[in-house]
Length: 217
Image (tube, rainbow, N blue to C red):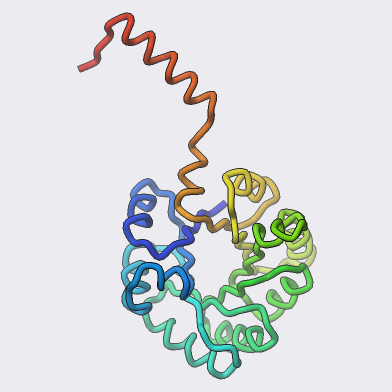
């Protein structure tokens, strides 16, 4: 499973990228606003840093305007994936932009029917939101599984990009289900390394080392 980092904080991306943990980046206007920087400037910097897709989101709601914005965003770098919402106008924009050879990430997906439409419209990525479904007492992981089944049934090339990931457990479950990509905040990705038994084992190991007076250097 590929890891995309869901942030616009360049330093956080650089840290994970140095460890080989970054296969792409997802951003949106809200994330970039938190950085306090110009949307085009920070997106270009991220694109120069990572080799994989960098999702940059349109802000328009009408198809023609989305298409115009998508073309503008795609000029930033070759690895831009234009992010559009899963609305009827968003699907229209997806079809046009994907037909032009641009990567398109269709976001805010909350049902298998929506995911099916996005695949038919030529989406490169579909972004089902796990955490937001969990918030309303619907298991978001069930949606990932449903989309995986549908896409495999018909051989769709659209990649499942699990989004709105809140926990390290979400990451493991998405990998087991077969999501192609999971995008998560840097803190969630780093938290995947944590385990109480690792901490306990390390504490015991260090105590033994200190007692024995062992030094390597």
